[in-house]
Amino acid sequence: TLDPSESSAGATALFFLSDRDVVLSGASSPWGTRAPSPSFSGEKYVYTLPLQSLKDSLSFNEVNAFIRAPYGGGGAMEVSMEGIKELDLILELMASSPAIGPIDGNQTVLNSATSTALLDQSNLSSENDVENFDNKPTNSTEASDDGHQFIVDTPISFGPEKDVGLSFARTSFRIDSIPSGDYVLLVSQLLNDPSLVVVSSTPSGFVVNIFATSDYPSDGIESVSVEGASLDFIELSTDGHYLITLFSTGLKVSSLTADGITAFMQDASLDKNIADAEGLHLSIWPALEYEMMYKDAWRMLRDYFYDPSMAGLEWDRIFDRYLPLVERCSKREELDDVLRQMAGELSALHVFVYGGEYNIPNHGDPMLEAINEIASLGALLRRSTEKFGYEVIKIPETDPDFHMVDGLPMYSPLSSRTLSMSGQDGLAPGDVIVGVNGESVMSVPDINMLLRNVAGESVRLEVVRCNSTSKLQEARKLKARLLESKGEDATESVFALPEPLIVVPLDSEGNSNLWYTAWEWKTRETARHLAADAGFTLGYIHLRDMAGAPAEDAFVRGFYPDYDKEALIVDVRNNHGGNIDSWLLDVLQKRAWMYWEGRSTNITNG
Image 1 (cartoon, rainbow, N blue to C red):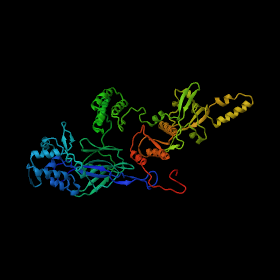
Image 2: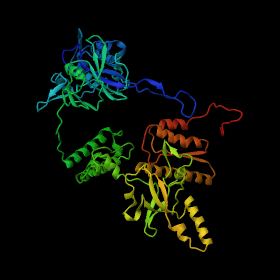
Image 3: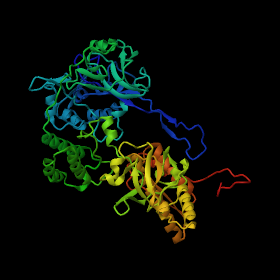
Image 4: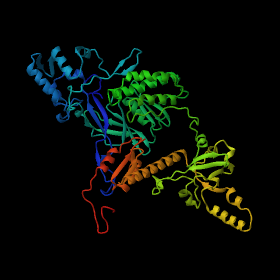
């Protein structure tokens, strides 16, 4: 932002978004298992943090800096907390050192030794830093060797060293003239105007908002939004001089000035200043790109991993260990594998490798994806040449009390629990599937070839019931008994003929979810039986992740039926992470201080 009181351009404030409005959750009643608790509303405000350069912190009177807010236009003393400890330091130095000369107007005269002492308090390294201030550019950009303009960070004073009071951060304040909103990004302030570019989220998509300020010293702010178009992308150019936005109309480039943004807001059709991206290509050398990505991933962990000691590892040697593998990578999936091995050396949670560009065989074509999607019958099958079909080895069983979980069925398409709803009988291990939609399963290398693009649709199976029964099977047995009573051979009429079965196969995700749910149920029952054999009662909960309502539902389904057990297992193996752990621990530590009790109910069984 520009300081109206100074003639030179330079950053004097940092703008940021913050959500600080604590409200109760959406629950309207304090009763039940999920009582309301305070949470952030999601509405954000725009705040600003005044910035004071290291040079300016020494060049003006520190007493005046204390009693006036260090941002353009001045302000109330109570919003400027930064000078408290600096003032104590200055007064102490003035009382103890003759090196500080008399005060002339607003200028404090300091000799080089005292200047160095003050600079040391502001985290500067030497007297050279003091001398170099006069040689550093006062503008926000400087020219590089190739003549391009790039933003140069201004050295900022962060207050005294070891300032546990965070006096620097406490000088921030909210801009009252900008209303709260569902803001997701504060893009920038204009180069020659105090107006701000902010992106907000709406039900129809992301919207660009311009908060235009009135002429100084007025604090009036007018909000203008780009309506009628959803924003797909917004970013500043490398030199910080242009605003780059992507709408359905194309890639739009606008000058980050008052005139440029005015023209941007007046372009209702969003078809002006569109960059010509037709035929734009990028030449990539995969081997060099993979090496660069590896270096970036290694460096990000080095700079941002929570433990500066990198879990005691020699991180430079980790880099050297996996670099030869990167040089042998021929595709992105192999690079991801190397990155996972490198990151896995830290043995830390929430270190992921995902995303990126992959060679997808379906090329994003919905038709190709549908054709190549393999549906599942929700059972373990084995090809049997002796039985001329696919034998059912295992059908997963899940908790009978939860036939639906979060709106999804939890039964195998071949299970009686599924087929009974259509008046059919399910299969059992040992039964044989001999045909799919009129085609023999032995005519193809794998039964999956007959299950392409049929997930969620009705499929006719031809089955031979070896271990299960059905109404048709009972009718055939009755016919066999009649034939036997007449002295005729009835073996073929009972066992040799297959019978039709109409099922609805699952997609790959539904099949995976079914088997996982079946494993949860089996593990829960095993834990209960082992506890019963040991003479105590046990509850068991498996949490796949800790993210949002599905995880909360899983905990409620597992916890409250077993809240009165003597012991509880919370199984978080293979947990994908999330943020409900604090809520979960809060529920587990609750103690019933008061409760309702009627004549016909009690706290033991309700």
